[in-house]
Image 1 (spheres, rainbow, N blue to C red):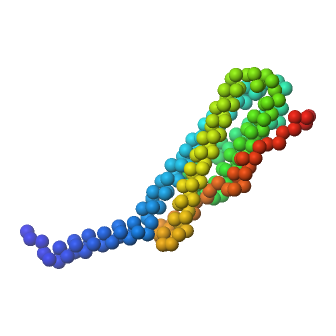
Image 2: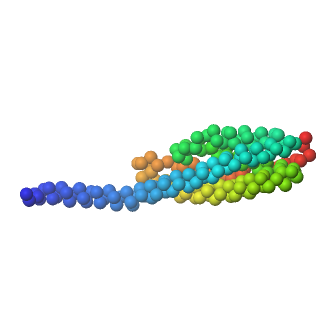
Length: 206
């Protein structure tokens, strides 16, 4: 049965409309939003993987340090408490879209970084720990994990910066409003400073 001219016109109109929609979405940054959103999710997953690797190392470190009878208990307690606080926060993918929850998460991880840093510095004052090969192996693993955390965080910071620039820029900001794409929270300057500042340790403190 032959197709009527009106039917052909209707099909052509729909095809043209679809093409216009695709072109407009591409031109206004829609595809870029999809790409950068997936990129931030992927880089965030790697941050979480490295934080989890660190959390898994801590029980072994704590168990080894406990073998040093005279070890500064306050330092050890702070590590245990900081790990408990950090791991109690449910780090779901949605967390990267919630500034308040994200801030709590990064503060908890920053506190754990500080507590671990102090523990490593204090351990230098204990010859038995310095001579303990098991502890030294754990220390090397921890240092490697901290380096991987830094790399993962830097990748996440860059991916969020790219995404947020797209959200704020014209005309992609119009697309952001239409599809409710919000600016994502990022690691703060204060948090970076906290992590990079070495702890102050007074070995004469009783």
